[in-house]
Structure formats: C-alpha cells, structure tokens
Image 1: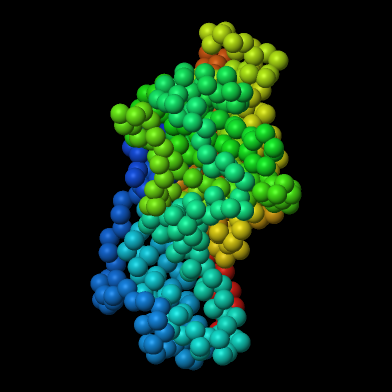
Image 2 (image 1 turned 30 degrees about the vertical axis):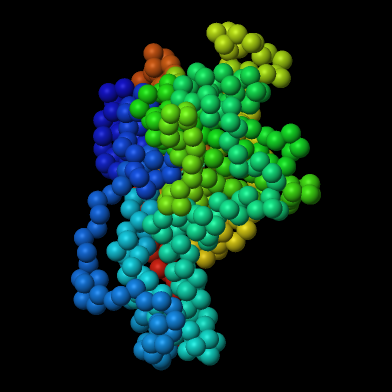
Length: 468
Ligand code: HEC
Ligand code: HEC
C-alpha cells in the first residue's frame, strides 16, 4: 500500500480522482467542496485558479454589442491573407481547452464574443460572397458558437435557455409525467433508509454506491408502465452518507423511448434536469432554476453513463417489490452478490439505449476533432460507437477516467485490481501492488500524451482549410 501511495504521489496534483479512488477510501463527504457552478451530478471536480486578465482583453474594452449593431460595423478583413492571419491568430489559444468543470472563464468568453464572433458577424456578407472564405472559416465559425453555448454562465449548455429547455421537456407532444420525480420519493427525503424503503416498496430498482465522481449516492431507475420513457435519478448525500442535505440537488434524466402517441423512436432523446431540494414547514420540495449551469453534455457525450464497474464497501442494493427474492422486512439482508448483479443490470440497461438523439440541442460535429486518436480512444469514441471526446468534454473527467479510475481505455485487469484493493486489502499482494503501480505509470503517460494532443489537434482542425 505504501508503495502504491508513493506511486500516486508522483502524479500531478490535478489528478484529484486518483486520491479519491486509490488513497481516500471512504469517499463520502470528504472530498470536495461543492461548486455553485456544477450540476448535482458533477460537483466532484475542482476548479482551477482563475486566469489572470491578459493584455489583449484590456487594450480594447468593447461594450457587448447586439448583433444588429455589429452588422452595421464595417468588416475590416477583406483579403484572403487577412483571413488566414485572423484564423491563425486565434486558433492557437490554450483557453479553448479549459472546460466549465474547471472554470467557465467569463473573461475569455467575452473576448471570444467581442473579437471573434463579432468579426464573423460583421463580415457575414464578405464571407458569404466568396466560396473560398466561406469554406476556410466554416469550422471556426461553427465551433465558436457551439463553444460559447457550452461556456454560458447560466445554462446547461444546450441551445435553449434553461427555462425554455425545461418547458420543452413538458410540451404537449411529450409523454405525460416524463419529468416528474414521484411524490413518494420526495416525501421520503431526507433519510437514505427511507428513500430506499420507498423504492423497494414501489418496485423501483436502486443501487446505493460511491459515484465515480463524488460521494455516496443512490441511483434509482423508474420506467413508466407503458414503456414510453425511463427515468433515472441520482440522489446525492453530500455531508452525511445517510442523509440528503437540506439544500442539495437531485440529478435527473429521462430517456424518451416513444412519442406521445406511442411510436418507438429510432434514437432516444435525453431530458436532463437538476432538481434543487429545499425544506419548508410543508416538508421537502423540488424546484428548478433558470441558472443551473452544470454542463451535462461535458460528461455525457455518449448520452447516459454506465456506473463505474467497481464494487466499494458502500455499494448496496436489495430486491424490490415484484422481484422473486423481495422481502418485506427492511432488515432482511440482501442475497449474496446482489449489489453486483444490480450494477451489471443497470449497466446493461444503460448500454441498451445507444447514442442519444441530441435533437440539435448540441452539435457534436461542430466541436472539433474526436480527440485521443493516438491513445486508441477513437477506436470507440468515434461519434458513432460512443460519443467523441472533444475539447469541451470535461477535462478533469477525462483525466479521471484515464489516470484516476484507470478505466480508460478499458482494462479489466486494472479495474479488478483497484476493486480488490478497496474490498480485499488483506489479499492485495506485493505483486498486485506492483502491477497496479505499473498500470498507474502507463496510464499517467497516456494522460499526458492525450493532454499534449488536445490543443494542437483543435488548432489544426480550425485552420484545416487555408484562406490564402
Ligand atoms: C463531471 C462530469 C459530469 C457532469 C458535468 C454531469 N454528469 Fe451526470 N453522470 C456522471 C457520471 C460519471 C455518471 C455515472 C454515475 C456515477 O458514476 O455516479 C452520471 C450519471 C448521471 C445520471 C444517472 C443516469 C446515468 O446516465 O447513469 C443522471 C440522471 C445524471 N448523470 C444527470 C446529469 C445532469 C442533469 C447533468 C447536467 C445538469 C449531468 N448529469 C452532468 C458525470 C457527470
Ligand atoms: C474499447 C472501447 C473504448 C476505448 C478504446 C476507450 N473507451 Fe472510453 N468509454 C468506453 C465505454 C464502454 C465507456 C462507458 C463506461 C464508463 O464510463 O466507464 C466509456 C466512457 C468514457 C468516458 C465518459 C464519457 C462517455 O463516453 O460515456 C470518457 C471521458 C472516456 N471514456 C474517455 C476515454 C479515453 C480518454 C480513452 C482513450 C485513452 C478511451 N475512453 C478509450 C469505451 C472505450
């Protein structure tokens, strides 16, 4: 174990997740301060320090101008050479690579709006009139609007404002009840035992586990009786692993499988929501905010997320009403190996949905190249088998998958060793420790190589077609 610890200690301080998984074994509550910015699903990642203001941002303070005003501005870039310089000047900026889980970087967002997006707007006619300019700026233009959307300070990062997004999920063409958290569960708050009791009684399968990204949570699966949609809830226990905090959030998503009239959809749209939990004299309530800003797509590029395939000392589940081994008595122990079976079952249901229909709410193809080619990631993350990993995919989360969980690219042997160390530390031999240490070393190299490729790959794609 000490050996392992020293291996881990050599990793970059940013690889917080390694400590989560391999050093701090009790993960509930201990790890991370919650960030107002984060979604309830994602409060695990640490923010980086805010960046200092760069000179170019001070030189020309411009007011945020409406599109109409900007269009009135004359376009200062006319020649093909001007455009080539423009693209090259802005493509190579490391701030493109900072994802909102680190810091949405409002100063850089403003800079991109005022210097880059406004130029494209003011020059729309020039660009439109010249096929070479249309084509050489196409990647950059589409990228900038998607990137800005995924760095907006007060939205989930989808193309609609949160209010519009929430409303669209309950429009008259959507299945009834799809976005509702069953009132029985709200009444059961805040005790975890009560939440689990209600789930068991209602026949809603659940698993309490240690999240890949933060403390203990209960994941509950609630299909609807007519198979139009499935609901998934993540109930977070922030400070006490047995109790929901008075102010916390429940991450929610519905997988819509059929239209309201009952036609099966070929790809399933996902309906994300963060529900805020609060308490009043009338009991617990859930509410929505127009300012939730956790970027769901940043960690859900392939849609729903399987659970990390690791049993920890906190992992637990019991049969629910309707299952053959269900026992009314809450004190009855779970059958042997039940939590593992539940985890596998959940993961196969989650895998069965396939890639979602984003319905134009995000446009993955505008987010630059699929990253991780040299590390073998695009063998699976190619945008078809799984979502592509792009420059807006949560960077702390990618680091965590590679060098924290040691789970990407998937390596069963390493995953089983991480689990063994957590569950059977007495059997964890020196040989196991050496294998794990070698795995950590290799994964760290993969992580570094991936990191080094990210920005150059983006810049090459942004300037893929020359203007001159
Ligand atoms: C930092 C990464 C991250 C972000 C950002 C994120 N999630 Fe998740 N989410 C995960 C992981 C990892 C899982 C798998 C469950 C686990 O490990 O606990 C997950 C699972 C879920 C689940 C359970 C169903 C499933 O797919 O497994 C829901 C519901 C959910 N997330 C909702 C949301 C919502 C809503 C948002 C945006 C407001 C969001 N998530 C943003 C990482 C993230
Ligand atoms: C053999 C196929 C395969 C390869 C290769 C692979 N992945 Fe994955 N990846 C998966 C599967 C399956 C999941 C879902 C299970 C999970 O989240 O652990 C996943 C999930 C992820 C996620 C969460 C987002 C998502 O798509 O659900 C990230 C981030 C990720 N992988 C990063 C990487 C990186 C980085 C590499 C390369 C170093 C890589 N993966 C290589 C199969 C693969």
